[in-house]
Structure formats: C-alpha cells, structure tokens
Image 1 (cartoon, rainbow, N blue to C red):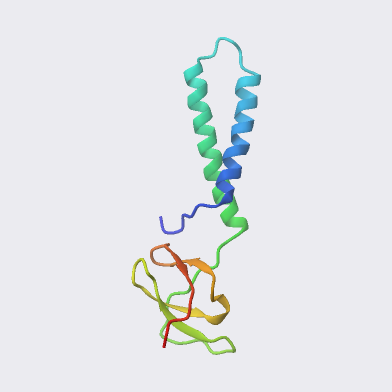
Image 2: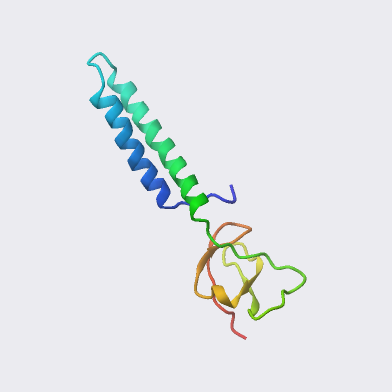
Length: 119
C-alpha cells in the first residue's frame, strides 16, 4: 500500500459516478425496485467511481518522489543534500531544485516538506 495517495480524482470520480448512477437508477427506475438495493448500489458505484477517479488522476498527474539515498552522488549543476524523513527517519537524498516542495517519502509514503538541513 506504499503508492496510495488521495487526490482530486477521487472527488471528481465519486461525483460523476453519483450523478450517473442517480440518473440510471432513480430517473429510469420502476416503482417495483427495492429502495435498500438502490441505496447499496449507489454507495457501491460512488465508491468505485472514487477509486477509479483517484487512480486515473494519479496516472495523469504523477507526483514527484524523493529518491532514496544512493551510495554514489550524481554529478551536475544541481546541489544534492541529505535529509531525514520525519515519519520513518529514513535518510533521503534530495536536490536543490525541489526545495520548498511537499513530496511523499519513498519508504513510508508520508508527506515531507523538502528543506535544506542546517549545517
């Protein structure tokens, strides 16, 4: 469950599936249908739509992840530095171009604000 995050896709998917299921069940429903079964189906379709929307949003708009510290430092114009995850205490390597961003830890998936450690 490392890569599960909540995003706006879940909200959009839930709303869209609620509207569609409402239309197909309530507007086109016959009077003989059981109200409890309709309610269960509405809950199922809203939940499924939220999961699908959340997944699709994550595919379309992927988050930048912090790379775990490697034994060799990459060369280039970017300055790399080490930082510690506040949630799982993992030592991570980050570059100066992502300073100030809030990203997910690759180990615990917790949110981390990238800031340069004090010397």
